[in-house]
Length: 141
Picture (tube, one colour):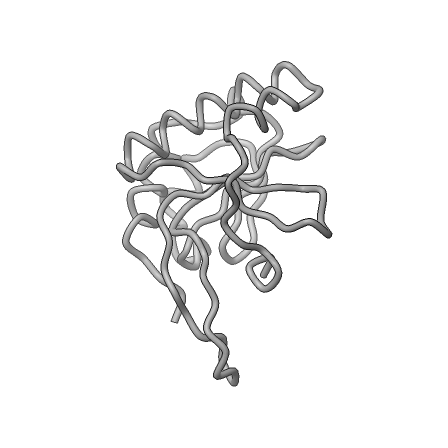
C-alpha cells in the first residue's frame, strides 16, 4: 500500500489538479473531488512524499497497524489519484465483495481496494457514489 511512505501534505489540492497536463483528467478530478467532498464531509488533502512525484488526494484520516507490524500508519478513508492513463480510486474495503455494485459500475478494472478508471464517462457515477459512501466509515483491519 502506498501509505507506508505517504503522508498528508500542505500542498494545494486545486494547484495539484491544475498542474495535470491532461484537461480531461483535470475535469474528471474536479468531478471526483466534488463527489467525495459531498459524501465524506471532509476537506481534501494532498498525500505524498518528496521521493515520489505522484500524489494522491485523500478525504478523512485514520490510524492502523499492518499485520505483523507494531508501527502505526495513517491513511485516508477514501481518495483518488489522477494518473496519466487512469484515475485510481482508493477505497478502504475489499471491493471484490461488492459484486452487485461492480456489475453496475461500468467499464473499469479493480483490485482489492482500488478502482482503475480510464475516464468518468465510462462509469455510472451514482454507483461510484455508493462505493464512496461505503468506504467513508470502513477501515482495513
